[in-house]
Image (cartoon, rainbow, N blue to C red):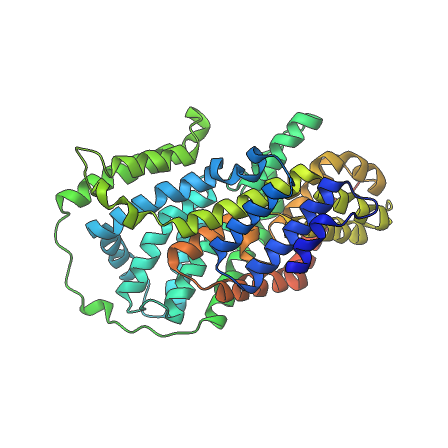
Length: 447
């Protein structure tokens, strides 16, 4: 990792100084996060320090993670999550769900995944879905007797985090990378993908089968058994005044999240508003003096570092250089549909590995027209090839919503990496070939 950082000061032939430094710093940060050699938030602080001292990018780019919507979603979500926990509403909702989920650990994981998948159709922000789902998921873990650090609790947290993120790539407005690609396609080429067409193309494999894969992987990696008899729990009493006030806040936030296409308010500001409401009269669900107990700086620094990494990678041009160089060597030709598909997907996964998932459409969409000509395919087909790639996450830090879920659920980095790598391997070996065949059935490679 130190070797990667040292490359910041060594010229690399064929690369601009900024691109070489951006790539070296990204590799160093990724290596430290992947190995957990030092705490994640310290890696983020080192990233900020070295980027500024070495002049890798301007301060607004280096610290852009603090201005991102995901950062403020997490900030507001921490406050709301504390209110859900302290008022007892989370335990109440978890208990109600628990009585519907049967008595098996697999049933719990399946239930959490179904809720996460359903939210993808009504909430446009994956981080928002994580923030809403995690208090309930952790409440479920408590109801079934999965204590902190247990495999069952880690499994439930990872199912909630991965479920709120990965299957959403099959639903057009559900995740940020989808929106980045759609916006860039409209701006650059005047293309406006249709919701139903996108859903038909991506949801069967990248949505439904990916959700099943996540549940199977989590069940295998984190086996556990239920430790509490839910049927013996007493029936809950009526809602307390605090629970009723929090229910009003959550219902309002959910309505605003689901209708952002009407009012245009970012999910981040909805979450922040909900968090502030929890502390203000007449709700007063959390004492403002105790806000430091609810808002923890370590996960906030980590998520800001992850988000800033993607911005630095994009701004320095190293991702563009990687993608262009790889595709020059890929020998794309009309009629070689399988080779073309997997070459573009491989290049996109490489870009995602260096940055984050939203980096892929920012880099690949401007190249789509020349790729379309090289492959002899319709432009919209070429654009859609990005989705199987940026929905394949090898490490947690490639998907900020997964990082948020792990921080809220106190999931060790090694366990998060095990889960994301296992899902990624199955995706590459099984799901991507199935996805290619599905595209063939739909005739998407017909020029």
